Image 1: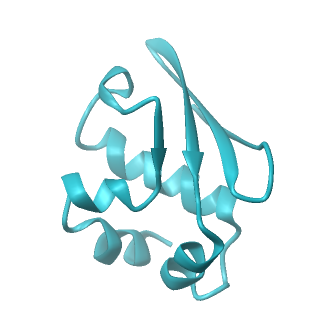
Image 2 (image 1 turned 180 degrees about the horizontal axis):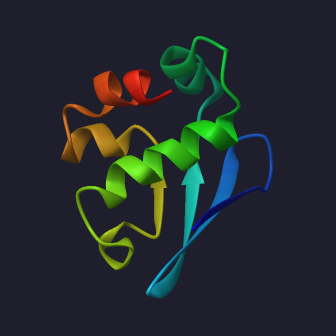
Length: 87
């Protein structure tokens, strides 16, 4: 289960319960969120689907505990294309 909680305008806490429970702090620049969602999807939904994307590739205990959302694309170049399709 993935839970997303907004901490402030650009920072979110994501908790994943999948065997072990992990907590991640993710920074999302509003311009980057707009680029990925075209303003049609809430940032919380973007993050939830982004963690679905990550969990298809690695365990929750392997995901960075603190990161900026564009970092996913550095590890997985297909991220931006696939997240648009997932949304």
